[in-house]
Figure 1 (cartoon, helix red, strand yellow):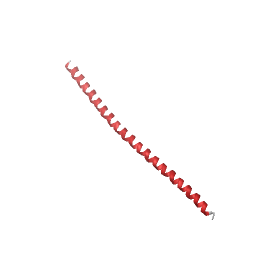
Figure 2: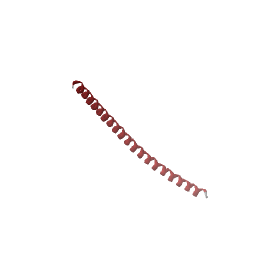
Figure 3: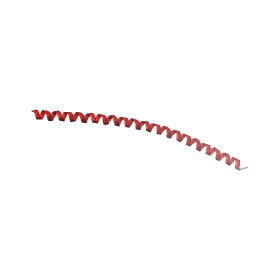
Figure 4: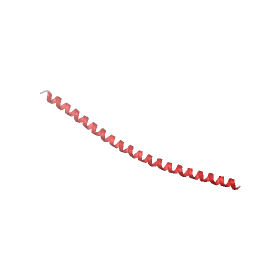
Length: 74
């Protein structure tokens, strides 16, 4: 008859461990979702910065071309 309380205790411990693991899994899912959203935002920001960099490069190249043309005419 001593096995019943031991089994009951083991089952309670197992149930608590399962609850802990479920909570951990939920927390990890939330963290994963948050990290994916952050990654998407960073990828978008990077694309915008690359586009701005290309615009700036084009403007600088256009200014250099105009300066060279002025230098040749002057």
